[in-house]
Amino acid sequence: MNEKTETADKEKKLRRCSWWYHLYFILLWPIALIFYPHKYRGRENIPDGPVIVCGPHTNLMDPLLISLAMGWKHFVVHMAKAELLRSSLAAFFMRKAGSIFI
Image (cartoon, rainbow, N blue to C red):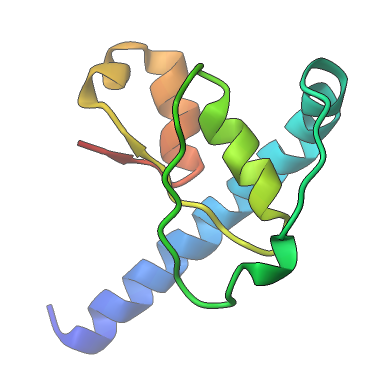
């Protein structure tokens, strides 16, 4: 496979994942507001390019809350444990949102 084809495939996958990611964002934002009231500070300090964000993972909601904190315009790719692939429903949604399993 040549370099041009690989780049096109990656861009296509990113657009597809981005669509699902934004759908989850729309659906889960109200739930997060109700159950996890929050106030974000320093969002203006997030650069436009790629960044690495490490969360404390004190509960299972941390990846979701970090995505919501990053905002609508930042597409977050989560790293997840390979063991999460055992749950087919969770794995389905995580793959659609662009998660990487390790």
